[in-house]
Length: 179
Image (tube, rainbow, N blue to C red; front, side, top):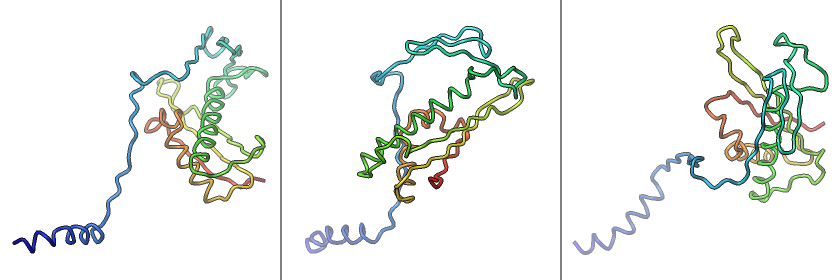
């Protein structure tokens, strides 16, 4: 009996090496109700899609896009453009942070790293059944495509916008060649 007990550690080690390994994706859960606030942004909207927005460091005039039956006034924007700008900037910041953590060097010139984000308002306006879809194109000069893909995958996991929209907004992120 004691001979069997002395073999147990060897049996366990052998079983651990030969057993198939199952990897379960780890889903990070952040309780946004109790997590410490890192930054907060405030905006006051007056006049909906045809009004204006005021924030601490922001004054923006809004217009209804031509595609939605509005004038599409030059020099004004709309909620979808603001969302595209915010998501793209946040995603690019997440890429930079992830690359640094992964030991991958991103370009030092800001024009050598580009995130182009298109936000689509989709659905049926008459039925008031609308949602968003996002397409993102990522271009980084001088970075190996494999390394860039790793950075993008990690950024998708940690970007606050990506996390907020996951399972709710169809999002496509494509790595494209930098011209």
